[in-house]
Figure: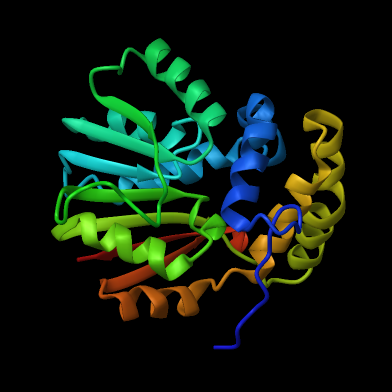
Length: 244
């Protein structure tokens, strides 16, 4: 597979991880609103469908990586009734907003949020029944290292579920989607969050991400078993699932 250039939000020498943290802290106050607006609310359905992959497993201990404002953590707690959900993220302002949402949801005894780096997880080997990531692996500085860390903390037989943007390939939807992502979305982002680069980066990072079979090959190379990929909404995003 051909190596692609590393895509970062701002193109500075700080590195992708530092730039991603800076970007999400900048857009945090408008993040949830823009997610609903820019996806026309479909992102809620995407998350529910991804979490449903875990219903037959009934995981008791769940790790939600790149948890952001805790949408997946809260939804998983409600749908799966686990004993514990731990959400980690590098952007502290996103976590602060997530904690407010958790308190309003009455789930403080189930969900804990903490600052954490996906590539250096503090948890023991074989600790979690399930690991989830929604729209986060695309932002990893080292994709393989982050996926390997998730594999390490997953129990044997445990499942990883990853929701990530992908690229539609059906004419003319592909062309309309690309125009919306490349031109309209950054403009809306600039007007509402005052950070046009954050949403330009979204398009660029999706273009660079190894989706579909390429991503499943990476999972297999790390050691995951039986990877699958389900494309949603004409290919705008995909759910990847695999076991340890």
